[in-house]
Length: 75
Image (cartoon, rainbow, N blue to C red; front, side, top):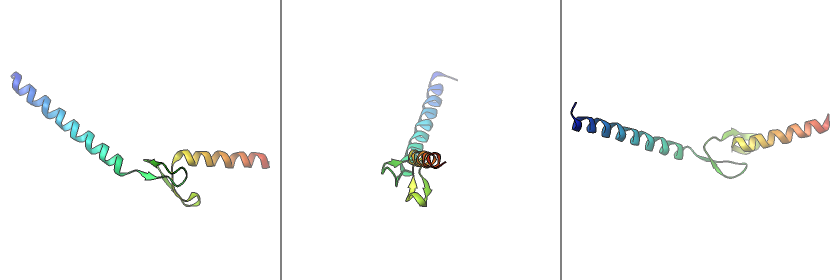
């Protein structure tokens, strides 16, 4: 392959990687949901109706620790 053909191949690969990265970033942005617990926009909220709807893992973890602490006090 001559130098020009190698540059074209490299440029096409870089363009493909850039497009893939942009599509991935767009997907991540569109998938955010506001947490019912802390109110922040998160990418990983789970539906927990007892906690008010979509709740992030941080809020679920806090609530779990609160429940475990209460259970430990009652025992």
